Length: 503
Image (cartoon, rainbow, N blue to C red):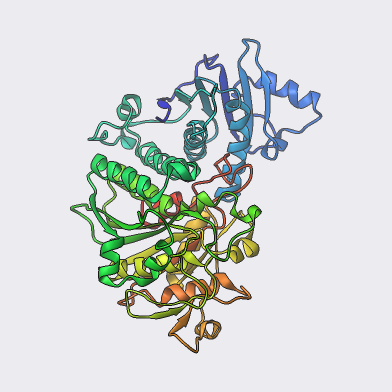
């Protein structure tokens, strides 16, 4: 459960919070109304720092009343990502003590205060909720309350409270639209991260399907499953090839639907949900198999976007398609040089069994595109070559419309979840030419595999549906990324909501 938010336009002379974050606009001098300004001035003097150096390095100190106070300056000329990092660093000075409540003071003009408040409240929400751990004794305590001071919450910013009662009452009373949307986004981000960190014995395809069914009942999503029996019957040979190596055969493509009466477009979200990836017969070495329970992150991103869109009642129809399976070794597992036939009739020559993600996505994309959505986006921790190209601080985007790819990059800049565009030119596909089938699954060399994987996937997008492929190289970034402090970032949820018009 997220911390309760209360908002106040006025700032008491001495805030009661035991942990206080003060956000200032970048300036060469401290503002006269800076909270605990005398203490801050003394700390700056002791460290021989100028005031505007707070825009690079937040500071913290204990006030006379014992409160821990953290100060940071925000440079509003910088991009969203840089502002997020600054807020995250300052918040972590407070959240490491696991406080019950945090006070947030925002200063500057109205626009600056609004921006600072949104960054800080969202940062407090996503970084204070407790992700699952499995320790005999867990001493962590969740943040229970956020007190926001200095923001005008006049009548113009009021909105209706949540009909399903999930919104806490102070936020509902304040009714600020921005915070209602941010709360939904935080819930989506946390769902994504919670699912991703679960150990593989707690998130097999069967257990995952059970969790999804419960969520569908809770949020009123239409729920449909294509299990292995049904997938064999319809001819989804690419998906079945990967999933047949598991015992039990609990893999499935799960289809969830959200509908809004005023929607003018339908968006399909497709997520790779490989609950554990051994590499198959092309077995991964231990260092690369570690954390392969997170190979289902693409499906968690799609679910997180769906949850946030539902809670925020976005006026868009969403079809969410989740490819849930495992890539195991067994006598039944698919092998190099197998030839399998995908749902759309394409024959595929298997080159490497660790390229399983594109196989399960192939048939899932075909199913999703046959419904003729206005836009289709797939999310996948797909290729090591994308991580080699970008590291863990960006994810990659490719698509079949140049203007759509550019929009994706722009939304990445706005959301702080940064994307880098890669080419998808036709001549790349020469590397996938097969002498014995319609297409090779990949190459053995792995050169430009992130591009070849997208070219492969494009073969299974029917009806010329506008399509984006997000290769999630930043699903895990050690010590956090942007506003998120944990290694598992939930990257893609905020960006996806931006693409849907939710931010």
